[in-house]
Amino acid sequence: MDIQFIKCHGSGNDFILIDELTHGYTFTEKEREDLSILLCDRNDGIGSDGILFVMDSDKAEARMRMFNSDGTEAEMCGNGLRCVARHVLEKEGKTHIAVETEKAMLAVSQVEEIFPGIDTFSVAIEPVSFEPASLPVRVDTEPASKTTIPGLPEHLTFTALSVPNPHIVAIVEDINQEELAHVGEKANQLPEVFPNGVNVSFMKLLEKNKVFVQTFERGVGLTNACGTAMSASSLVSTIHGPNETGEPIVVINKGGLVNCVVEKEKESFSIQLRGNATNVYEAMVQLDWSSRTFHVENRKEFTEEQTKYEKLEAYAASQIGGDS
Ligand SMILES: N[C@@H](CCC[C@H](N)C(=O)O)C(=O)O
Image (tube, rainbow, N blue to C red; front, side, top):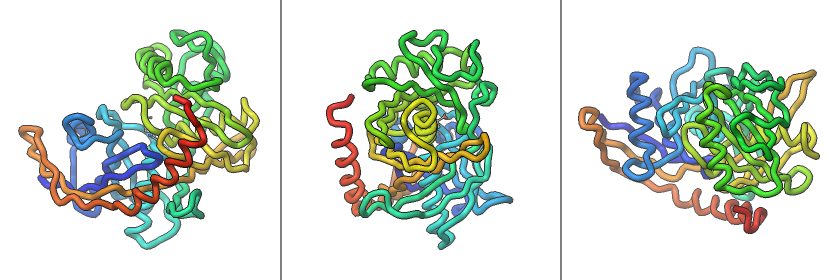
């Protein structure tokens, strides 16, 4: 079978985007899982944090399904949704559309550049909930807000929320990547606390409206950035830190930066996540399902986009200096 794909990234969180709709692909659930494990592999595959499947929707211009590199499906993916938004907006020749995701119809649009030369896309991150059952998380204190979590190091306090995939965020003085990897692995081996697993983030407050976030992603491991985690962390920074709703928060990550605006209406929160959606190359996978072997053909690079993105990356790196 031949499968056309685009290799893309949002803040260095990289994906294989497969447009099932345009190319008329019909995969079974098992095939989507198998494709994710096979193609995302960093050693023997194409290498990526996940696959974005673009599909038909009855209710919106398109539907996004996101599979992690271990083959599990996530409820939502913020960086991935920007890549899907760009793809569908360009295909439809529009500037605003809605994309169906597992838990919500989400508004996406092209907006003012967050950095010179970087086409920028804004995606709505909702529904947001601190309700423990929404992750789910099982702890004694409900909601789990600035609390220790049984099984995780006692010097760390976490706030748990779903956006709508599950996250816990700890505000730390300095981000220690090794510790984050260790805590992330441990948290995902605590089914009695996190029955569906959890994304774990450490956030360092840099200055008012500027934070640095790193994430251990459920189903992947440490990534350059996680869009839902940066959104969740921005919200936590308005509740337990100095930041305010309605103001852009610059979130520096290992792969670049995004802006998040936390909005509060009555008692409900939503977040606008704004950032790049960069295409790296497009190509075709020639796949033999029976032997689970493949090769990649017709690779066409989008060098100019990536070169522009490197300037943003260099700026972001300068903001965190020697931090992990
Ligand atoms: N990288 C994504 C989130 C992907 C899903 C996550 N690993 C999960 O299992 O919830 C993002 O940008 O939000």
